[in-house]
Amino acid sequence: MIQIKDLWYTYPGRSEPTLKGINLRVEKGEFVLLTGPTGCGKSTLLKTLNGIIPHESGGTFSGSVKVKGLETTDSNQMEISKEVGLVFQNPDDQIFSTTVEDEVAFGPENLCFEQKEIDKKVEEALQIVGMSSHRLASTNSLSGGQKQRICIASMLAMTPEVLAMDEPVSQMDPMGTHDVLNTVRELNRKLKTTILLVEHRLHELAPFVDRIVIMDDGKIVFDQPASKAFDHIEVFYRLGLRIPEPVELCHSLGIKASPLSVSGALAVLNSENFKENTRISQLLSNPEGNPYAKNSSRKDSIENDSIENNTSENNSSIISIQDLWSGYEKNKMVLKGINLEIYKGERVAVMGTNGSGKSTLLLHLAAILKPDKGSVKVFGEDTRSKNPYSFAGKVGFVFQNPDLMLFCDSAEEETRFGPVQLKYSNIEERVRDSLEAMSILHLKHDLPQALSRGQRLRTAVASVLSINPELILLDEPTTGQDRVNIEQMMDFFKNNNSTLVFCTHDIEVAMSYATRILVMNEGQIIADGKGKEVIKDTESLRKASLTQPPVVEIANQLGVNAFSVKELVKTLTSRSVERIKC
Image (cartoon, rainbow, N blue to C red; front, side, top):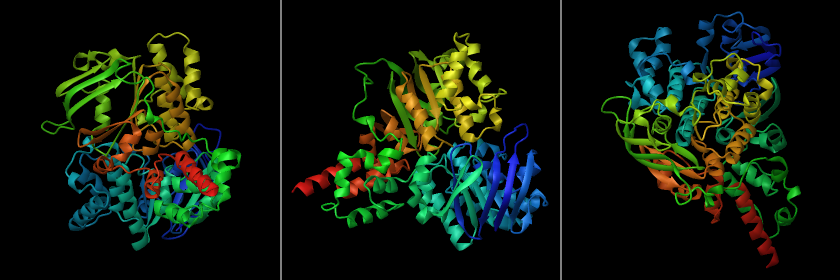
């Protein structure tokens, strides 16, 4: 179905190739996960499949890309698009219709389907992605995750033989992700649709795919069936990729197994004889023998047992919200009676289902939106009478779509812009430190629009860090990031004195780095507390389309109180030692 030979590609204005001698073959009906460190060329490779590269991009292209025997360089894009549906990394780059119905119908209309068939395709595609109730909605009113669903639906409506998807679920809630991937998998099995999907969230995607292909520095460096891929776990550690918690747990216990699911991990653990497994007991006394301890830089300490000096008794309130109601359309409220206090130094994760009001809440904290009813006070000032610019230097905001913030000719200029406008001193030091904190100092002269999505997001974050705001607001900061970059970014905020409020669907990141988690559903806060408290509230999680991390599910099944791989390993090894003593 797809055959790529010796593919090289260099973007216009760049001297270094982004793709370097790619060779890849994908058979009809395969479901392939393409992953790798941020900026390694994954998205670029996908764009060669439907001819965007080189027909629309320019640049230097050599080698061969064939889809169903069609050479993409010799075929026009209309011809290729009948065979290849491409879901973009950023849904705002793809959506252009004003209503959901028109967006999903656009492809079938241009393929000259009959109107009756178009209506059927639209309804089927919206049902697949769980958006039937939004058929007549404005695309501008959708959340980022809902937009991603619409982009997937618009491709499914054309029933392409190849579906190329660039981080299609990065902004979706966990249950929505699971539902969409289940359906895509069914299409793959029943219709033999060939799927090539780019994603960093290996822990969520691995159970669905047939094969895992890893890129690094423009090259394919790894290609294995999903069932055997994590037998080579050192490759994932070396490249800083996320590993499914069930796999991480077994390898941390010295067990030679790579289960991709909770049930698989439980089967492995129940088959192990912990009384006689001296290997497990040795891990306590010899952590150097633990492959997890040696290779993983992930922070497994869950900080939510105590909020260090972040209580109302010890700190002043940074944000005070009373009975906040707000909406984008008259008589259709997005936020419904929000009451909230956030204190200096807290790191607050805001979680919930797509469209629950998370981003809208964040926009109120930056005074970009004003309440329809109620009040929002930031640093003691009522935002209703304040211009958002009045908080410049004190409040830093990074949008869900970083492209809305980037307008300079280099990453360095983006980072310098804020301090220059605010007439700060030590500008060069601020710029260097901010770029370094986001691991993009080596990209300082690059045009932001030429960077990968993950690198663009980190450029936007650096442009905010350079003004050293007291309150930092981040909307989905882990999108497009590999594990190493997530940890470096979140470690920075952990060690920073600023107050942080961030929206995320990544429950593992929230558990590891937030001192407090808010759960939202239908415009209301339905849970608010320390991570360990919230993660036990399965009813609230269910309402908000969230799920417990796999390691917590495993611990629950084993009757163990643990909230991270490290905690569960310690508990299991301790039990093993006690049994051996007995």
